[in-house]
Amino acid sequence: MRRKKLLAMALASVLLAGLLAGCAGTERSRESTAAFQSKAESLRAAALSDQVREQLEENPAGEAGYAVFFSVCDGENRASVYSGTGETLDAAWAAGEQAAEKALKKGGPFPLWLKADLVYVSAALSADALKGIGEVFGAGCFRYGLAFDPAYETALLEAELNTAGIYDYENGGVDLERLNAYLEETGRAPLASLPESYTAFQCAGWLCGEEGGVSQLSLDELSYGRREFPAVDGNTAAALALDGAEYLAAQVQEDGSVLLPGGEPLSIPRHTEVLSAMIQGYRLHPSETLAKSIDRSADWLVSQIAYTEQDIGFLLDNGEITLEDSALSIIALADCAGASENMAYLPACQALGSGILSLLDSSTGTFTHVLDASDLSRKEQFRSAQWDGMGVTALCRLYGMTEDPLWLWAAQQVLDRMLTKEPAQYGDLWTACAVREITKYVQDRTDYFTFALKNLQGGLAAIYSAQGTEPAGLEMLMISYETYHKMLDAGYSIDGFAPELLLEVISTRVQRQLDGYLFPEFAMYFAQPQKVLGAFMTREDGLCISSDGICRNIASYYLYSANYDRLLADGLSGTTG
Image 1 (cartoon, one colour):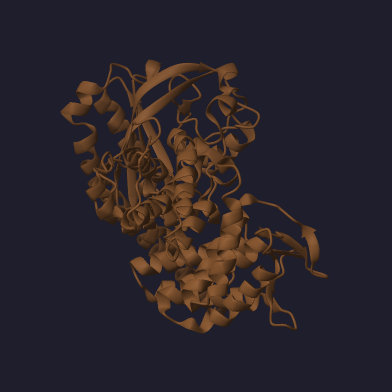
Image 2: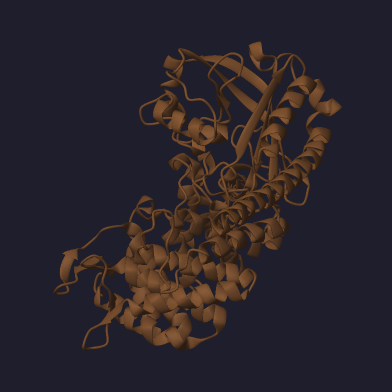
């Protein structure tokens, strides 16, 4: 009898726990449903306005009539997408709402972000035509959703297809294996085979964010799917740079190394760039979180320096000693000193500077780029033209820290040699950095400023014609813009140089690079949205999120923000995003 009583009590406890869990689940479902209904109503007011109805053609989804998608994301997991079709826009909206609410009542995600998409244009697309997307559009750049049947029973948004790697840009067409894995992950039925014909479509979209505000999303070909901005002003640029810096700070480990997607610690050059980028964020907003990440990553970098008996410092990198490693490390540690006014890293910078001097042939102004770490013998005389600019920049930063004329003299030896080369050889970001740094201290050399303008003019056309989110262009433009103003301040003539073109290209790149920022409306389709929110991707590289790309974007928007008032005074316009 006692055993039966104990079993009965145990069973009652299990049932009670189940009931309590069921009640909690029911309460969460109610909260999710209520939040969805509230946000959906806000979206309805924008998406089903008279203006939208007037611009929407009849049956934009083809045979399906009208199609509406609701993307529901809790911020932690990939968005769940629910759709509906109908003979009218209102019917399609109601069907989509009903599908979403049904899922939420069963325990679907809480709608931290809710996005509504209305199909506004569609066309039949053969499987053969789709095979050419890689050649025609480039990786990540086919900006169309796909319906796999005329009724839109299986239909995926562009963001779903690209973030899940379902578009096969290398081989062309759709990757059936990835498609089915995604469909199964999201609770939808897999396909036995791919159709001979698809319906490709684009949507007009709106996002309701955490606080309930609604953002209209762009229909422009390049900025398709991200929120529209009235203007990319200095405050917006500063916020973007700070977001990127805080994202990087979250990747700094306890030992100071930095991990990004993939799990391996960054190489020394990429680590130094992250350190400099976080410092730029700290200058915008000196938070304790950023400060701690900066200190840890700087200490890690210093711990990697090896010293000779003569106290010459080198960084050992996969059996090599490179000019790049030493130069970028000096620049990053000098940034630390400048931000904190703490000169604790000066001895390390001087030791690395001595290492750079040991790579310099002062009679020719030529660096040896790579040494064999085992015996310090020369391994490669030359590897990259950009490394010369890095070396000059680092030597100038050392001069700024110490006022020791040795560093400036060495920097001039190298730059004087660079001036004798064809401009095309040095038309890059680091050449622009080198000239900007050296003209802080040497302003009686007309040829330095002339070289800076030639370097800029050589890159303007290529930067202006670039349609993608590749970030280096804006940073180079802003660095050159600062040198241009030094030239004006020094009283030099700028005959033959058109600053209006420079301002126009800056305005264009500010907008294009914005398309690589991971706002919630695109981050929500990644597997772990909060882990990519605030980062930058390079769409043309298959939506790649790389430390280098993030750092270049941070530097770009940081410099744009710092120079914004002067840009306006010079006549900057066209910064609408």
